Image: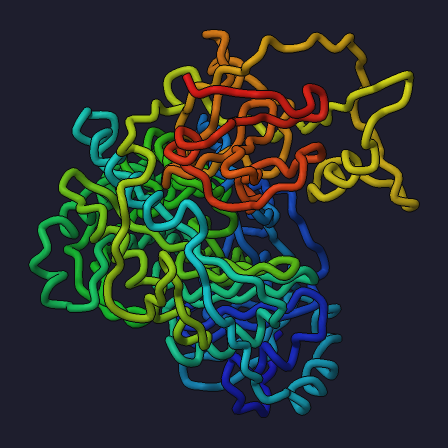
Amino acid sequence: MRIALDCSLPPERVLLALRGEPWPFALTGRWAGGGAIVGAAPREVVEDGSFDVLDLVPPARGEAVVGGGWFGWLGYGLGARVEPVPPRPPRPVELPDAHLAYYDHVLRLDPDGQWWFEALSKEGLGRLDRVRELLTAAPEPKDPRVGTLTLRAPGADGHTWAVRECVERIAAGEIFQANLCLRLETAWDGDVAELYARTAAALRPAYGACFVAPWGGIASLSPELFLRRSGREVVTGPIKGTASDPAALRDSAKDHAENVMIVDLMRNDLGRVCEYGTVTAAEPVVQPHAGVWQLVSEVRGRLREDAGDGALLRATFPPGSVTGAPKVQAMHVISELEATGREAYTGAIGYASPLAGLELNVAIRTFEARDGALWLGAGGGIVADSNPMLELEECLVKARPLVAAAGGLIEVGGGLAAGGGVAAAGGAGARNVPPALGPGRRRPDPARGVFETLLVLDGRPVNLEAHLRRLQARPALPELHGDGALRIADRITFRPLVPRALPIVLTPYLLPGGLGARKWRDRDLLDALSQDGTTPLLIDADGTVLEAAWAALLIRRDGRLYTPREDGRILPSTSRPQAIQTRLTLDDLERADEVLLSSSLAGLVPAVLR
């Protein structure tokens, strides 16, 4: 059912009109042939991360109308459900790995500028009067200014180190290409709908998307089509190659090499579910997108009769342009070299409609917000001749127009990077710190849970309140009763305390991003690093000393105690004495009057570097 609306508002204003309704969203740009799709008040919300949900809609009829269907995002983490990849790096703020909501009605702006109310059912049609009322009172956009976004630690040094390491792996034949990302972040309590209204109006993204959640949401200014399926015809539009100058992009051998590799990867992915001989690729073209120029290709195929949307996603997800080639091994490299886990970023956003089919963007150029935090991922494809500083600059070239459109600036290494370049030092790799990750050694698996270790004296736990606060501060881990009491999911065990031999001998290992702010039950990595009888000391890629395997680190210098900052890369201590939180390096430890470790069981004990 389709009814014309007397409405001349731009799609961003329509989104703001529906903002007070449950789970509002907007898709603007080229979706469904051009225009916009806006909706709210879904009948069902699913966050279990299953591609099979998309197969619950009937086969699409390929019509010009949308009507409704499943709308939402599929986060990068879903890749672990289709490929054998190691756990992600620490996730400073977690989003659901997938969010899909079923809408039985939507508002559709067609390419001619006419707004329509479209519904899949009589129940959906019953929302028409409420929608008209909301559109009549549509508010004016407000300023969602985001302020200054800071490059998250390990920052520029960490990213340039990761690029150098990736180039070495390419030279060794491990991979051909990997897409490495960094994170820009800030504290922010603004409105995601207002953020999207401002940035989308300024940048006019080809595949823009906004989903507003009770805890925040996402605002995507993506230029890239991941998948469009109409009937049995499938098309993908991978982007590889970015520059501020179109002539430089046309002449860049490095960017064209990236593009060729990813086009081949997408042809292979589509070939897994398309009829033999139907997959074809067009020559790349240079297109303007969101303040930059990009090299865009198009790959087409015809889906087999026995393959639905779920099978199509399992064959192609995550998108090849934001992983690398070969895809699975590139995802291994991403897990080992990146410092923070990806959320919705580099997954896919869009819809599956029983009328219009499937359409998803690649979730790049995407702001993500939750519980007072806002962040933006930026990355680029690393190939054999990649220059670390130029790769860092490419990330910032992509991020600057978005942040500027949101009224903000980017801070890198203490300086504002609204324009121009940046400089970065060598990071931890300059000291030849051995890697913590490698063959047989993977990051901790969060699915195995968390634990706390408490000292018990004379039958009473020491500092129990601090340990419970630390558990409660970890979202989505132990559940709490309504009265705030902790629900123990597994068990409590007791053992006699055996004092450690002193001083503790520390062996440095490089682990990008550290272990994060949780005490993981999966200790396989730390146990493997401890097999020589010493205690692993974790160092980030920028050379920052983080923590020991089982204790917080401190140094004493000139009568004062110093300790690493609790910035999300390390477990917050429940036992450490008062100390000045600052950035520490191995040089600081070597010059210290005393190196100390602190834990709830051992107390404050001396340590030495190996």
